[in-house]
Length: 93
Image (cartoon, rainbow, N blue to C red; front, side, top):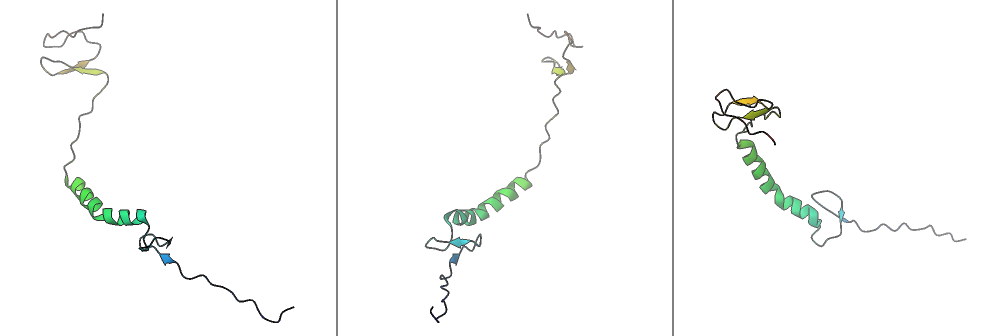
């Protein structure tokens, strides 16, 4: 038996990515995907701000059981053959 104690070999500290905090083996110290995310951040914030500033356009609810008259624009029930204005709807043959 040897009287010498075992020496613990500690690996050199790894470079930590400043974006995600995980060890990085790339030359610059930042993962490529993290670098892209970091570069896109200002553009994404600008796009989100522009989208939030746009007024919301509410689309009218289209109901499946109504149809619009091409002559007067009134909505009628889908089973009606004729509008109140006199326009007849073409039926399926």
